[in-house]
Amino acid sequence: MDPTAPNPTDIAGYLAAAPALAARLGGAPADWDVREISEGNVNYVFSVHGPAGALCVKQAPAFVRVAGASWPLTPERARYEHRAMLEHRRHAPDYVPTPLHYDPALHLQVIEHLDGHTVLRDELIDGRAPADLGRHLGDYLARTLFHTSDLALPAARKRPLVAEFEGNTEMCAIMEEMVFTEVYRPFHRNQWTGPHLDADVDRLRADTALLVAVARLKDHYLTSRQALLHGDLHTGSIMVSAHRTHVIDQEFACYGPMGFDIGNLLAHLLISYFAKDTPGPETTEQARLLATVETVWTEFDARFTALWRSSPTGDSYPSALFPPGSDLLDHERRAYLGRVLHDTIGFCGAEIVRRVIGFARPADFTTIPDPGYRAARERRALHLARALLVDDHHDIRDVVTAARAYRAVEQVTRRGV
Image (cartoon, one colour):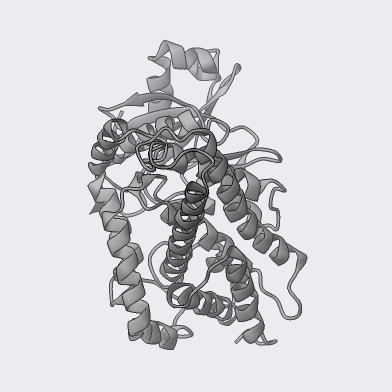
């Protein structure tokens, strides 16, 4: 197999040589339907259907797939993705597909095929949001973040995990630069709806209060080792069906602040909210998106608190000093989650800015054909992002209220400007 350009024939031959994987498909290679379904920017992805079942095959070339050799990228990202999937699935099996095989020589993974699932972003663009989405994602975040933190893990178990994922430096460096640095200065990867947003970009880059807030977030991202993060959690890395939710694409996994994962997710739900703006009152679909934003946090908060009460097995807040059920421990739980919410809101704002004027703009916006309409919606998202970064917000309802307020301030005109 050519790891720089795998094709369906290569994939079929590889699986045929692995009896356990071939048995999952059934039949012979001639009976298999192998299709490339690469939708992301960095990896090759194939779906393979056989008479008995289906598999997903993901291969990491030594470059960004959409850019080719002009943008080198470590193929070791596949190893960290595989390890993060194993770790997160241990704690949240309902929300992470089963990793079945990893080949370190080819940087190739074979993963459970999620039959009947579609990418969440596509569903949101088409106006379909699963009813249990907020509850599922809040539960997923609580389980993966709590169980990989010092609240659940003794230091002797957590430190080796931190050390292991410290090796994913190249992927983390991409996130550090794209989210917190590149968008605030001229850089060749930055993209936005010009000339409509040119003045907005100039204002952001001259906004000292904003720059300080972003610098503090970057410092927190660089120095915090709070929990094992997905690292790039957005609506394109979530697969959904009518009643199930699965999180994929963990190649940016690292130890970092919990609020980074939560904030990234909320940012993309808010991007969808503004992308769907129309003249007149807020639509039912928009209201549902804001309700999902609120539910993600409230479910996370409730589930995380319950896990802390039932499984305080880590070295933080030792029971010798904080007996279970004590008022002092209850107070500390609220303070802890208050800090996570503060981080979440800041990282949410930073991700919105990055996705509007930086690299990898989301299809929620880019599929709006009229640049004037698109820029009007993006501008509202930018105004909310600044408020989330600079102003004080103490409750998730403050975020929802602010989103509605910035929508109301700048209603779309008939011309979309």
